[in-house]
Amino acid sequence: MKKHNFSAGPCILPQEVFQKASEAILDFNGMGLSLLEISHRSKEFVAVMDEARAIVKRLMKLGDDYDVLFLQGGASLQFAMVPFNLMKTDGKAAYLDTGTWAAGAIKEAKKLGTVDIVGSSKDQNYSFIPKDYTVGSEYNYFHCTSNNTIYGTQMKEFPKTDTLMVCDMSSDIFSRVLDFSQFDLIYAGAQKNMGPAGATLVIIKKDILGKTGRDIPSYLNYQLHIDKESMYNTPPVFAVYTSLLTLQYLEQHGGIEAAEVRNEAKAKLLYDEIDRNPLFEGYSVKEDRSLMNVSFKLTDESKKEAFDTAWKAAGISGLNGHRSLGGYRASLYNALPIESVQVLVDIMKSIS
Ligand SMILES: Cc1ncc(COP(=O)(O)O)c(C=O)c1O
Image 1 (cartoon, rainbow, N blue to C red):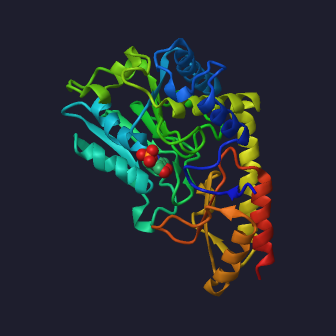
Image 2 (cartoon, protein in one colour):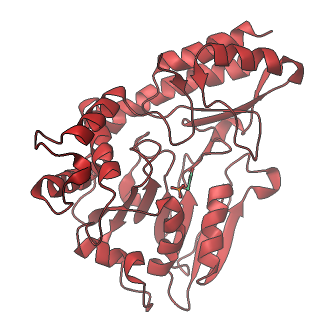
């Protein structure tokens, strides 16, 4: 039986994508060869890479002033690549500290220059998104994390600033409609709304590069990846191909606009139960609640065994909270059907 997968990532992808990806491992496009044994420079794979890059721009309604890269190293490598490429040798950057991953990005940037934390919710264990801050043009760039996967908070507004806007969208990319052109650089590990772990998506406004005066190690240099059309070295072919399948699936099912409607319905169903049922309590403040990751806990720990037994028996997987927070976390990524959320809500209703 297919489980109801609430895992925070790697996570559920559309079943059709799993099916097509597994077929490509055995025989890619009727070539008599596996996707995993053809050259990444073959015309068949170059077509995969080109289409994957093009579809990202179509879905996000971005123009030719942006380039799309599929790199490796996860979002974690982007924590270092961003300052390497955007922070001037004598410059400084502004960061919003909204959680463990934002703090990871801050740690890497500090190795290359001055970092000002313009807002932080750390002293309240990242239960909200700071809002009363400004970002002046003295900064080389501003970095934020649109969705905080562990705490279940999500930025609903982004600051207006004259400096470059960089956003880690690892856990809510392609999940809601935004004006993506307000960002100069967006990055995301594939393994939530896009594909398997191993590929990292970077969307970058081309004219922001080449201004730091740094000698950037080759793999870390965005310009080199742009020049080589994401083929500087052997790309993660399986992760890129599977990402393409998910992106095609998304485009065929109404794009980001339709995904947002489905995601709002799923989140409302679950948050309504958390608010209605005195046995459960949400983690984050209401106005900053994430549509993607719902972190919550029991208000009466004596019900833990009954609740855990019930959701496991119902075929639910991946509901435990992050090890740093405890409690529960239901991740409602694009591919999770509302029927799975209903199963969880029915179990929550049955606990009393
Ligand atoms: C918001 C966010 N940023 C960064 C990361 C780190 O991603 P990776 O494991 O691809 O390096 C994660 C992982 O879950 C994340 O949720």
